[in-house]
Length: 92
Image (cartoon, one colour):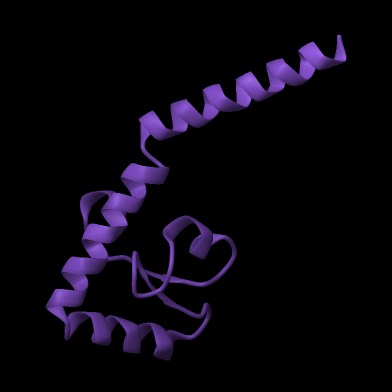
């Protein structure tokens, strides 16, 4: 939600989060999970750099538009249905 609003996201590298939010310093600001000191340092870093916040926020928003918008999701769903349909036709 933050990314979709153009707000620079600070998140952890836990699980699939980097796959969703993108590269550190590009579309999000990432830190390792479970390290509150690293999180605080990353937040301070972001707060001290308004240009970086603006750039990361804008790139994050574009990532959401490109990869996670309703339109993109619908197009990918249709693509998967077509792939499945073609596979079923080849079996028949």
